Length: 301
Image 1 (tube, rainbow, N blue to C red):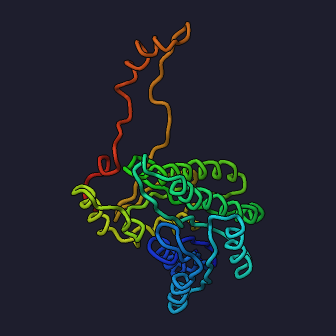
Image 2 (cartoon, rainbow, N blue to C red):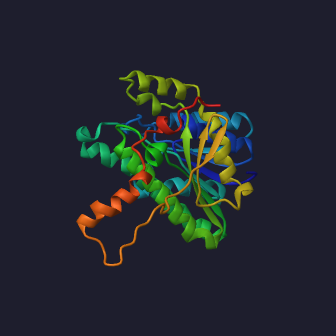
């Protein structure tokens, strides 16, 4: 990471903070972005969290600057990247980490709950990546690291807005990886397992949820940072278009959607023949409505 310029959004606390600290420790020049809002996206304009991280980096001999713009508007995203250009002259890596949570069971989810989560996570990731892309194209190098979630990759209750945004980020990352590969620009996703103030907003209204939250409390955000910094560095020049997960001392590679079963009928299909022959042949391969805890149910290692 020596002399590489990295932007980390939502870096005032939690996972983003740990990524910023490690990137600086490894020699990177860091733009620490944080809007200063609440976990549900309310409030803004307090750069104190970002400035505290910058102060910590500088005390340890690193190089960093703070930025308090929002990722959820194109103008704010442009200013975030411009901060890197103005201070360091170029941009090498973007970590799209900023996010909010507005968990609701679907029939109680408001339009505002849905739209705000989509705007911060999915549109915010696009806005910041799009602002950085021309610089990376011109310099023929760069790396994007986007944060997805097993809420979308596998499933969780009460998070249809979050799951939709996080699966959208998977598609965005793959599109960037394919379009920008000719310019030696990479794009990958990380699904983190770590305790943060966002996770702290999850309602513990059942014994199962309470156990899940207690497991998450044992997983520090510092455990996610090494994978993110690796993907931001020159060490990962051969890695693009992939989906990883980080869980304590475990790293996972996720598969990606591909056909697993097919049926052919020479004369074509009708609703009736689909019911009689098509679905019965495929039902054994259906994906169950599992939650993340059903699929990854063992204690973190």
